[in-house]
Length: 212
Ligand SMILES: Nc1nc2c(ncn2[C@@H]2O[C@H](COP(=O)(O)OP(=O)(O)O)[C@@H](O)[C@H]2O)c(=O)[nH]1
Ligand SMILES: [Mg+2]
Image (cartoon, rainbow, N blue to C red):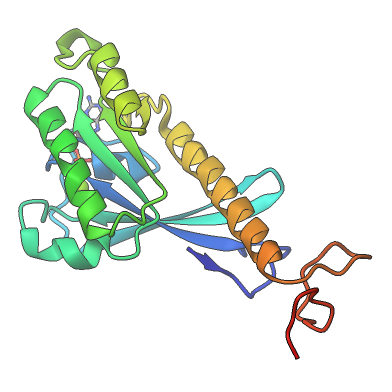
């Protein structure tokens, strides 16, 4: 996470930036959730890592989510380290009609924790293709239980109908807001607070226990 110096008041600016990584088997529907419109059978053979930035306002704070999406290299283990480095949030995506993709998403949890040195703020378990209810192979209850047991957030969404598409990012923005609050509180605790403004100051002269 980075705080921005550009002033969060102007349009297009934000207070803090968070890196979000999308993880999951190829074909589960990760990229489709980032696109503004859904095209059936769309499978763009892009190369490299795609970015989709979102700026959301939550409780008066503007946060930018920088979303990293693999462009079809899910199979290649060697991109993992760079991709995961510095991630604040991870989305473990699976296809609700595909048990194998669900097992894979669950197994990625360990990998995320390892490659981010446990510094990840929150992980989201995301069931994609919610419109394919008739072909569902992974029950909501089962995924929900796994999420609860492991301290993950859980949501199911459909890129096709648009259901819960925005809710995924709103969920993360809300988590981001909590992180900002915690960082600010810790920062205030570390520095003396100006009694009139309540803001932390750099003035250390009033420290009660400073030794001369
Ligand atoms: N029915 C349905 N199909 C989807 C949905 N999301 C993606 N797809 C299809 O699943 C395939 C893979 O999607 P894509 O977003 O490229 O998956 P990725 O490899 O995880 O990025 C494409 O043919 C999409 O059209 C969805 O919500 N519902
Ligand atoms: Mg993709």
